[in-house]
Image (tube, rainbow, N blue to C red; front, top):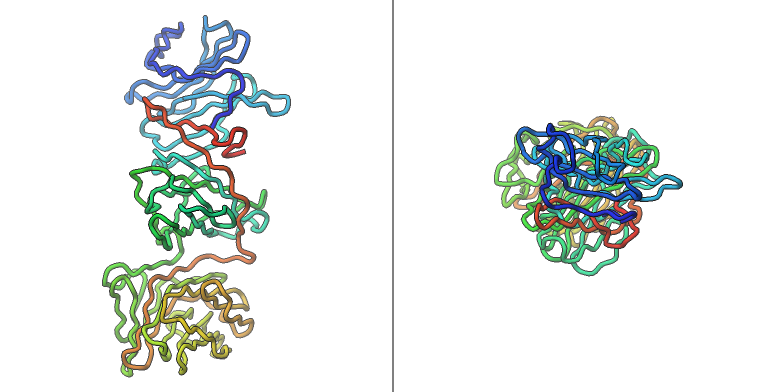
Length: 459
């Protein structure tokens, strides 16, 4: 990714520092990168040649055409300086050094800078720290939440819709072509310091994938966060993890209810084929509460369907644990085919919606309850169905599923998640350029080159 200023080049041979007239005490280092600063000034970058004993990579400088050299800075143990570049920043000629990890510090990759002709150096831009990104070939930039979120509001969540077939980069959608794996297992998200937790909501192999990404915080200034999407690693396996990404999550794997997430209050509630299945009965109706209570504002998403057009009195709700008198939102089947209602309740006093037509609810849909102070809204496939602004519970809530009261009526829940919510929600800024991560043919060390010269990954 380095733009070339004054002539810069790389030496791949393992030349000992003693070849350059350096002290015998550093003979375990090898020259990697070198840069001509003009006149009689040269820079070179080194790495430690052996894994043990472990030593630091260094920047060395000569001001007499290479006759004598002095060490200007070290960049940390297990790190090497692969390449140099120069850029002009006003009246200052800034020197840049590409630093990468070589052993125990695997995954680290950063740009160090010097604004005093190579005399002093400091870490400037950390591009990655996680070994799971090793071997990725491409990276895209996405700016999240430009100008809409203030600091201190906690974790945020952004979606990324990644397409392999031709599409326009817009909003949360980006086209990466065939550079990522067909199963999207190589997709990684990074904030420049740490890899970010993500969950793969859905995908069609070879076509598209939808990811949720957890963003730890968004500072008040500059009111935005830049996220990088890495891809292009042929042997990568997905790191999708809903439990790590959300405050509460379940995809109902296997055939057994997770006792660390749920408690069955009464009756029988089952899991089959990774779906939670409340089956209606005129007997003791199955009732299951989540074990994690949370306060507003929150958004709860669940993907579900029914097996019949009429599923009377089935409930998918936010309520105070084991208490129907405090509900942040309750979705339930009604007495008429293809009709649901949405209710809130505070102190035992309810406000109900009218009939809400969901004609196709025998097919999977994604429902969302957004619960705030004095407000609760129900969405279906991102379309608003109903909003309540009175009698909305303020007590901490759990996720609840309650069986219907007709024998054999079946609903199926594919997954459920709870996330933090803020109003307005984070928005997507413009997508940045795609950058190519070039691998050195001999050492497999990462180097960077812009796909579009003059455009930078971070700036």
